[in-house]
Amino acid sequence: MERERLDVLLIEDDEDDVFIIKRLLKDAPTITCDLTWESSYEAGFEACCSGQFDAALIDYRLEGRTGLELLEEAADAGCRTPLILLTGQGNPEIDLQAMQAGAADYLTKNKLDAERLERALRYARERARSQREIRRQAALLDEARDAICAYDLDGNVTYWSEGAARMTGYEKDDLGRLHSDDCLYGVVDQNALEEAWDAVLAEGHWSGELKQEDADGDVLVVKSRWTLVHDDAGEPEAVLVINTDITERKRLERQALRSQRMESIGRLVGGIAHDLGNLLVPIQLGVSVLRDHYPDRDERAERSLRMIEKSAERGSDMVERVLSFARGVDGERRPLDLTGIVEEVEQLVEESFPSEIVFEDHLLDDLPPVRGDATQLQQVLVNLSVNARDAMPDGGRLTLRARAVHLTEEDVRLLPDGAAPGDYVRICVEDTGEGIPPDALDKIFEPFFSTKDDGTGLGLSTVYSIVTSHGGFINVQSEEGDGTCFDVFLPASDEAPVAEEKARANGTPARGVTRNERVLVVDDEALIRESAETVLETCGYAPLTAADLDEALHLFEAHDVGAVLTGVSLDGTDGLETVRAFKERGASVPVIVCSGRADSQIQEAREAGAEQFLAKPFDTEDLRETLDDVLS
Image 1: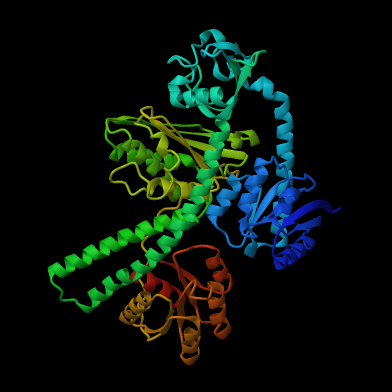
Image 2: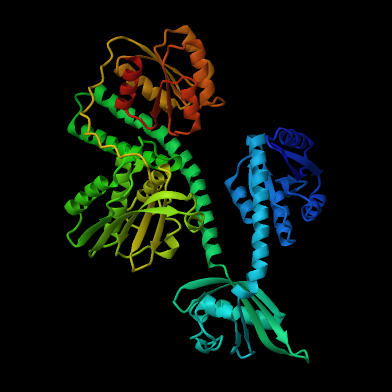
């Protein structure tokens, strides 16, 4: 296959990085790049605006200035070259600023390889082509689609184009004066309108965004350009206004920002929850130790232990739910018939919801199966139903609908980020309740955000995690005082649904330890090492503890170790290196990896030979069962 040739501009003041970029471009699988290098900010800016390049790679730091400044300056100058920002280390805030400044993409240098660089260049080039085509079409349609109107100096409408009538639903005869209370602008933001009018009279021109209400009562956001028109004598006589409807664009911008914010929040709360899990482990293990060591405790001490245990369990549950949001939700995926799941939810609603709430379901007979985890999907419907119940304190109607839909490229453009064309089952959970305030709609899926005084803010974040982990997405429509509808889209399956198995009987109890097996505990948290050591002794094991890999390997070689319990990452050592080090010295010794993050590190650790994974926070029973499993 013939290699595609691209003209690429590199703006970089570090010769070592230039050498690396050149080597990566040379190794690109399917493109050949003619690279032009500019080392200064000024020369790079001129080259960007020359229009000679298919794409430009811009380093974040440039001689005391930043690539973000260059991006913004190039955008203001009308630069059409697609620009890709290169950063030393990933920073969500810088990445977001880059996209807002008009970058086609952003790449982190320490994660850069030839394939990723080629993919970014191809995407930037294709995006630039698409934008050129959009601009070409827009140039042909602007005058017809935009609202063009003129006002005399008293604010009376003197001209109202067909485009203005189509955009707003108003004819010229329907309009009052620009400054009157009954005009289409005044009901939304009269102050902004007055500021625009004063500015155009004083300076001769004004441009900005305005909100206006159309004839149906819907609010439009328009990009408005105002020009003061003069007569032959040079005196002002009219104001020409051209409005472009950007309502949909603003909605998509909010959607993109919401997706980026959710990703950033996921990373943040994942790290916090991981640290909280480390703190909860010694508390949970310590309760078991205290019970075993003080069997003759009085009732007051027992009440205190139960309180500590219950609080730790609630904290562990919260940590797990937050981690589920941050990392996604695992589970068994099988073809499922939604009818049975809905019937169970209906039974729960009828048995536990107030009688003033009427439940209705509308499921088509030919509803295709979905591939998923029945328990998790039931949790989605239950959480949404409980939210609906809370939104209807005086009663109302809770309706659940499901039908098959096919989404096209055009359909998904208007849907939340993550939507892809294809066949789906659309599940709508709708209520007639109080609705969601507009300022809360963009935040309802964030963990810990709640509009309820006693809410944890984890219900909808759990719903979001489950739906996205199933390859689906969720959309919400709500009006204050007019109810809410959550639309859950799950990919349809062409496999026959599998009947749900009966719940298994409780597993056999842990076998107990009858021999003094040595267990090596490796963790850089002292509290975890100490509490695990005490619990292992209570369970009949002979524990060894180490704070780092070097100390652990020394103990491993000096003793007959039966199992290793290690954190997924230690100071200066990643999980893959830790597991591999133990396996090289004793392939038959089982390694258990402990972490609060089920990310790629854990998958790599398993591939390196780890037998088992123990999620933090864990209690004594979790630890005992895991050791029993790997040692049996």
